[in-house]
Image 1 (cartoon, rainbow, N blue to C red):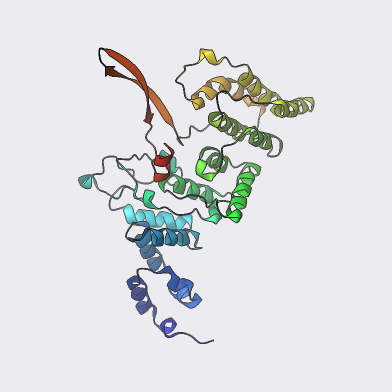
Image 2 (image 1 turned 180 degrees about the vertical axis):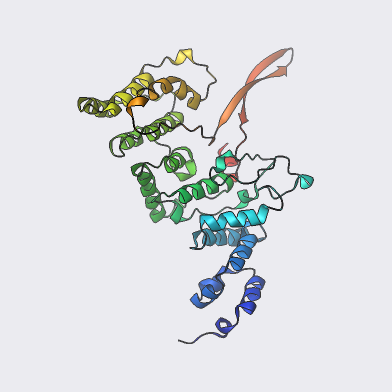
Length: 350
């Protein structure tokens, strides 16, 4: 096999050539030898600096390169965290600015375990919001390790990355990843699929049925899935609980406490008096007020811990503002976006 002249160059010369080519990834994709010789932390960091910090001017080229970078084997959660710290540590915030340069709500150090605890807004935007490419397939399917869940959550919270729904393989992979999250009883992964619409449609009663009958009826997962299905459903939509009631009846017959527990929740939903609740209450709060007492029942008879996480995905609260009109004032209900991540994807949504 003939080796090209450039492949015989020492690494000390290859690295500046790669840099002068504007870190053209086609160079290392065209040759396995060049790819191997340019495989170093130094090259990886510089490549990420160029494409993930908006130094590349061409949107199409930048987006394509970002997709290749995140799909690469070397782009692990550990490496990405190290790049984040090295890149933004001197600024002290993911917005890339110091207080003197305009940062007014520093988010540092980054909460890598739960990115949703970090607050950003349109006036204080994280630099990673400009990362707009496809989410890598390796983060859309199980097994759902702690690193994978944290990595995916961080990207969904801080970037504008989306799933390539046009690709049949990706669609199938994502659907399988969602099912696997339930079957593995991984609450963190299930929460991502339940509450982030970039990962697909919201759960329905069929999803709840799957969590109950096929995924061992983990209380935390069933509660979160039912809450999300309730949140995204229409207030006028009538739910058919018959299949879930049948499951409950069978479990009760088998002396399984899970049947009694779930039946209590379903009865609370079916017999709730919505007229007694605040009309401006969001559906998450409404669901909690209706269901929580039943969901907390029989805890002493279960071996698992019942977890309810207050997730900030897509949260909107309301206030009434009086606007003068002539000699009268009209009350107008205006949305207030809670402090959360704002990406270009979500700007379009709202």
